Length: 384
Ligand code: SF4
View 1: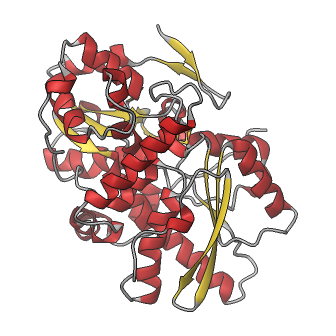
View 2 (view 1 turned 180 degrees about the vertical axis):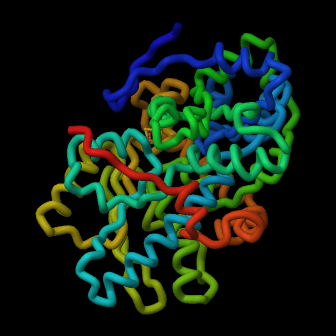
View 3 (view 1 turned 120 degrees about the vertical axis):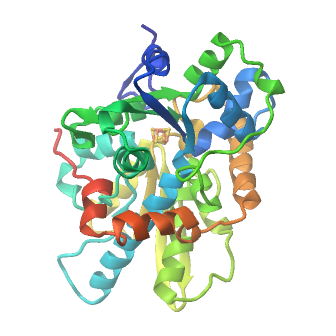
């Protein structure tokens, strides 16, 4: 068994590639795969391609040749996360502005499992502040094993969900009890970008020569807002694109929020929601997160919403990515690739993803509905 160490210092990486190979070889199982946004901006480095080379189409082609039955995109679930988290933000903001003292702000993002584990250990008295929205990985698993399994007409036990993640902590997240039904996990196995590269090489697939192929539908359709989840500031920028239009009922005058981007460890910006100034904080790296949390504890925080990611640069710098040996230039090139992918997308706002709209119409009802709450939200635990 291959074991490596997570750079956040909290977790140990256990290679699940063998389990994925066994699932792919089992004719009684339907095996589907989701790939996180940051993977496409870094996988090429494992095949001697320049840092920041986007390999989305080759990634899909490789997964198809490895034998996955459906090739889907975690970005679909990132759009879903924005629908839920953005609605939660607006609900909390509305009540707070109306003077409801029981509603706390800022709301904190919750899609990074190492960050979730950090606040459960270090700041358990603040567990009511983060959004209750599950991470995109877990939203994908929950929808795959209900909505999509129903569409295929198979039992959840016969559907195997595999994740390709830039992240070591995502392996731990799959094993949390709240993401299982009758002991069957929503996501069965998570392997890292490096582990996928090793599997592609082991299978003698000539990655560089692969054609560009498209994700399958319905869980493969995504927007530019979802892609930018892969870098620091991207989750909150995606949330702003949707929350602004839902709140103001007006079309955004611009889609690129340069003031939310960059590599500074702590950043802040004020976004004008048509006369309502929304103050946003961003931190990447847990030392930086701690500073913002201590401000909240001391009652000094000025923010309405804060995005926190554990890894430097966000998921582009995740512990499962090709080694960058602390070279920030590599991270910057991956970040440029992520924003390029966003620009390449025909749709760049999560609430305009037609398959997300259909998912709510056919299955979930509306954001924060009872069903959405059951499948797409979670709870936190005091782990001191
Ligand atoms: Fe994982 Fe790092 Fe991304 Fe958090 S920031 S989800 S630990 S890769």
